[in-house]
Image 1 (cartoon, helix red, strand yellow):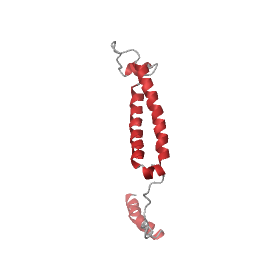
Image 2: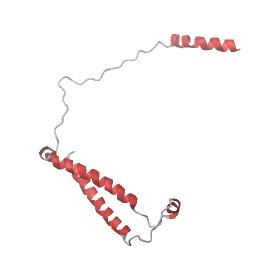
Image 3: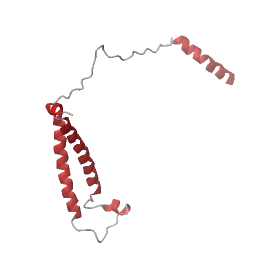
Length: 126
């Protein structure tokens, strides 16, 4: 029995090769047309005449995005429930009253600024 399986296994590759001719892998190299140049000119008037301003918008957009993530991460919810208990959150007696309200107000300002700057970035043509 073992010799039959061994013989079948040894002749199987020849049978497959005989049944289907090997397909030659053809690769077509990617070439650009002769004289092709990428268009690197700014497309909006603001990007053409004040590139420093468009890059300032982009930098401000990134900074506001990071600030928004951090501010949303440090806020506490109204009811933390079991996650606050298991996470080991410690409430301090010296914590100032109204700190959560101040963080919420700053977060609202940053979120509104983020939306405004995102609109300016999209309109500036970067």
